Length: 430
Ligand SMILES: Nc1ncnc2c1ncn2[C@@H]1O[C@H](COP(=O)(O)OP(=O)(O)OP(=O)(O)O)[C@@H](O)[C@H]1O
Image (tube, rainbow, N blue to C red; front, top):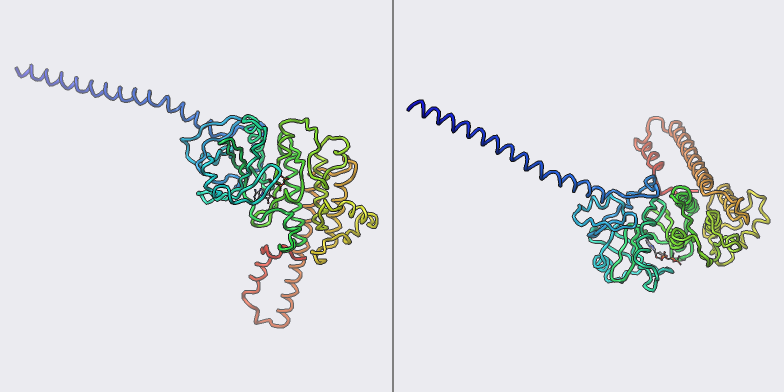
């Protein structure tokens, strides 16, 4: 009897152990099977967020402010295809290709039903939009009579979206709803360079800032010509297409005309803005990077003279060129609003560069890369001069203090000097 009950206990124990082992096995099998589809999901999800840059734009400088916050983004454009991203966290969407789809409803709300007009261009009105995330963007509503179809619009957005540079007004999103096509850009709070040059109500731009703006624009164009793959010719460089941010740094805007160039190389009509147009382009109908260089040269003269190219700026320059000796003598065309507050050497160097850009023969014009180098050198030597001036005046000050008050030197005087070196307020010093 005792033997029998021992056997029963052993039997039950073995049964329990086997049962537990089977349960553990079943648990792991179940987990394994659940995991497989998850692995598949996560990789496809990752694929949806990785930007496809068929053009090598990964080498681009992606700006911190180009990864702008979004208002319930729905999808991102990849190779012209819209990919659903509804289930992803916003942060993932923002760090992906950067081109976001905004909903019409959100934009309508952010523009107070499209009443916050900030400008009107050839392609349609531009509105300021205050998104509920706190971001401010500019919404360009493309004219509804546009013959552009859905597919062309997607292609265009994809082409524009691959261009990212700190000196370009980057495209951050788009909206294609209710038969409307909208492009969403980084908002440039200080408006256009044209306004700052010609609006009497605004403070005149000082010389130092004008040279900095020229270098910013040159860098943006250099990126379009030599950094973007395939290269992009802007086709409409002018002061109203140069926008300024809060700290007066410039960015090149409006790729309206380059868009067509990217989609189709056969543009038969003359495009661009009178006054900035390369004469060689007018006669040959062939627009090249050197045509952008010509327009950039006109822009440089506009910065120097504060004169509108539509009002005979180039004729004015040609007249002045007769009296210059190749390098000097350009001060006679300097903007009177500068009040003669500029470094003469700098002004002559910038004008000599501008004159090379507007050479009738495209081959004799410098490339945007050369232009960036020249302008950078000008700014660098200005910086060196200022540093030298500061250090020699500091030495003189120290000498005076030592001679006059050897034991009463202010403990703050060194600090004060340090501050002035970093200060941006002196960017308009001459
Ligand atoms: N990203 C932006 N941030 C702030 N303002 C902008 C922005 N984009 C455009 N604007 C404003 O809207 C105006 C119209 O811009 P848009 O680029 O449509 O035309 P345009 O360059 O003035 O003229 P066109 O279309 O003939 O070249 C600009 O002059 C500028 O004042």
